Length: 208
Image (cartoon, rainbow, N blue to C red; front, side, top):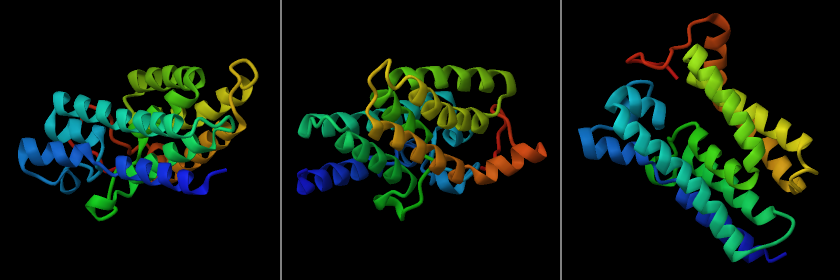
């Protein structure tokens, strides 16, 4: 294994992930720090509440895209069979989103970037988990619940479909680690879901 190349794709992934589109768009559109408004989270859901649908969709797509780009760059630079390089680059992008170098390490929860990474590496497991997540959001209007179901469902589907879609073991490991990370980042949301105090999408304010 080329350690220097591995470190390079990790660094590139992290720097890509550190680009906070919610922060940049909020500064451009409203001249505000998105982290000081709404839920205080630098992500698409809070952008929806603070800026509206258009900016929120833009943030969502760009955050997904940076996860995709990180993985594809790793695949291009190091097309190894084990999956270590794209998996680590994808993880680095998610960590960059959560703890961005450029913004004092205060970022979002990494859901959109996680979608980009997992949809690129394990498309069908991510698709099936995503369908369940979307249905849950439509029925309950809890974005956090949908995010958690996606994080949990992807590694489960990936494990059972591993042979069918020839999914590398490294991708399974990554999806499990990302699920754990997502649950930890959403720990406050989980508490509110349990107590019934979690905000629903469509409300102006969410403490997440």
